[in-house]
View 1 (cartoon, helix red, strand yellow):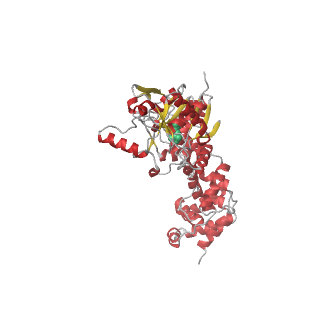
View 2 (tube, protein in one colour):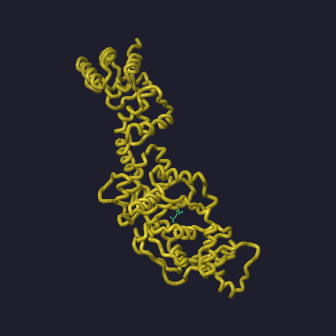
View 3 (cartoon, helix red, strand yellow):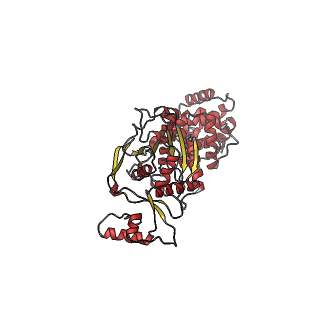
Length: 468
Ligand code: GLU
């Protein structure tokens, strides 16, 4: 049995879209599942839209997700001689031919077809036998393109590993350009030559390419090559049923990274987007590799659900190591204008907060109170520091001066003051929170006090309580 070889072949015309990342993930998981190889190929033949930054962003996104490749990245623009060579081979065998039709001529052809109510298509006028019969003479002042001679009758089909049997009548396809006049291959030709040269056994890609597959199959046949298997994965839609795009919010992998998602959360989410393994929702890459198969890829489009992704991210943040979260939260805090040089160790702060944050940004936002004092407004203070609570707050302030500074004694102290003042927990906890952190929503009061430290807590309490 031949070893399985899959590939991911992005066009570097922008960031890695979550749809592309999912295609990469499925191809990668399929190769890993079968102990095969995963090849990375950059389809950079669109010279106007391809950029080096996009290549870098795509590679960085794949690395961040932990999708590693065994071969490549191969760049199509470095393989031009090879496409030329095979185009010439096809010409010599009669499977392809030069075409000198100009843009204006092609436009006129389409116009005439439309006027007749026919579907616009290239009419094969430069097929050598027709050109000769029509007395067409190759012009010397311009370079020709190379077109593939597509069979005009019959049909072409394949058994798609995701979608099942698919067939197209050849009459729907025309003689496509495979090599442009400047020697750059078109998508359909570059893909076939590369899939062939790279020994790809399974082409797993988005189903926006289903219409290209019949053309590619003809080229494979003309090159005398064995066909790879094809599996076309349905698109990802937004909540409104439209194809997922920027309108729906973040769509690039880098954006999710920058928005504070963990790679294992996004990977887990993408794996479940159009593929399932029983009822499993939470699993790591290793499990995906153990379970992945194309039979359980859904035939219908998947819907992107940001809430579910946030839920998974929260799960992975809760599980994450404190030291790792501290490393991630530091730049997020810096982006909020918060330096963590003074104050409690960030690792201890994230340990306290990670249960309640669904992104690293939320974690940073919650951590802010330990490093930056947001002074509460006088009005807010007056609302919570009342005749009824002030004596208890003062009592607390004086007991805090010499109590042992750990969660247990702090909780006991608060409890003791509540009792002697005859207050309920929120009546005291709310003003304390407000005075020491500027916010009334914080994690458990004793934990917050402990982390802030005696000096800070006393300074902030006294600032508000001893103004008269
Ligand atoms: N460069 C193509 C794309 O980005 C890849 C198509 C394929 O996988 O064959 O859509």
